[in-house]
View (cartoon, rainbow, N blue to C red):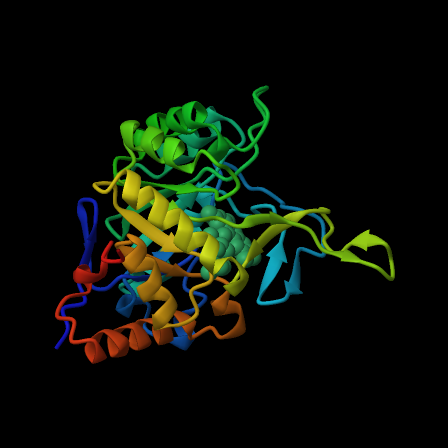
Length: 303
Ligand SMILES: Cc1cc2nc3c(=O)[nH]c(=O)nc-3n(C[C@H](O)[C@H](O)[C@H](O)COP(=O)(O)O)c2cc1C
């Protein structure tokens, strides 16, 4: 028997496999395909302090070994989610990680404050820093260590452990990870999507309504492995949740060996909604074949 339990900062989970934000709905959408309580956690789509419409269609497009999306963070807002979606998700027994986003530091603080009284099913808050900052200092929050630290400090009002979800679209990833850790992040989630674009030669127009988008799926798996490895080498005491192109247990093991304590399954779920459970089963099968006693042995074991 393998001990599948892992920890991420102050939290313990029965196993390291979670859903990735934005790919498993806002609530219990995946419940018809498996027992959500059997997953380490269910990370829901990012929510703002207000309802948000998102980007014009088309919002998703297939690519070689992955997909590109510009959904634009459509969502009902934290308060509507607490009222309309969380009860059904909590009833499954799942451990829930809420994800929040904003367009300025105050937006993040407001979303975090709205989560302060969420029930005990919401075990952590993932702060999605891969969003454009509309407050004068242009660019993506997660590309700027100072701004990322400000957001993390402002979200402490949620009164539960916070993970900072970072972007691979920077050469300052280690600086950003160190900054969010100093500002209260218990862990970092690595990585969000990679900036990308698809153009349809027949129309000479971008395939997505937004123009550009974010690439995800198997194509970005090595990007995620590198990000996790680099941050773990630089800051070994900072827990990492690895995400990017995980489609089976082998991919999950790779991210854990690079330094992740847990992994999230995203794009693979669109091709097969049972993917998170299949990743868990195949990770356990692989680990058993390797004679591993505890999955915690894997974290950072790559030389
Ligand atoms: C359609 C779609 C929507 C996404 N929405 C969010 C989101 O709301 N918040 C977030 O932090 N990440 C979001 N992501 C990024 C994923 O959580 C994940 O970081 C990324 O897709 C890489 O993992 P994957 O290759 O397993 O999909 C989204 C990804 C996709 C494909």
